[in-house]
Amino acid sequence: MIYLINQTTFQQFEDIAINIKPERLKIFIKKVQELDLKPFLGHSLYYDILSHFNDDGTLKDDAPQAYKDLINGTEYLDQYGHIVLYEGLAPTMVYFTFARFIENDAVHYTATGPVIKRHENGDPLSSPEIVKLVQQQRSVANAYANDVEKFLWDNKDDFPLWRYNAKNKSSRQAGPRIRGIDKTDFNYPGSYNNYNLTITEFLN
Image (cartoon, rainbow, N blue to C red; front, side):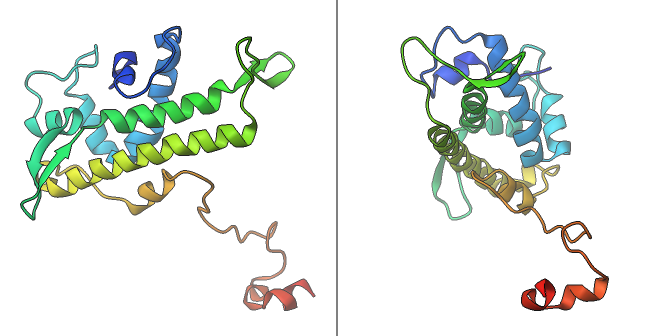
């Protein structure tokens, strides 16, 4: 598994405890790459980018310059001639990872079931406070992801494998989302003709 960021990258953006094991952080980095970054970039571009990485997570010397700029950031002119300071993929991945880490770290799984962690030097956050903190980190991640998206649009000729998908943008937003409406008989009993009834007629 190639990890695009590590604990050192993390410390450039967030002050995390030094006693957090790198192996533990890698669990969430992997989830972010597979569940957040891959759908965002698209499978073709994502796997092509990984093919230009060494096993230690560094870009190969012969990697396309466009990929180096996408990963590491760059300064460029957009279509209107404005200077854009693009920071690369790192901050997007860091804050998506941080959100997943906070969400998971609040719960400890025991033989008798999940429990809220207790700490000697402080009280654990309440569930609403954890949800709020996770959403804050995802909001920051999304702001950086919008910069990545703008970079890809502004340089789309250099990324022929990238395919924009509006569903991917909506799916990465913080908070609950409606993905679709289930019209199976379990949720909407009756015959097909009943689908055209008003809600008051349906309930009667």
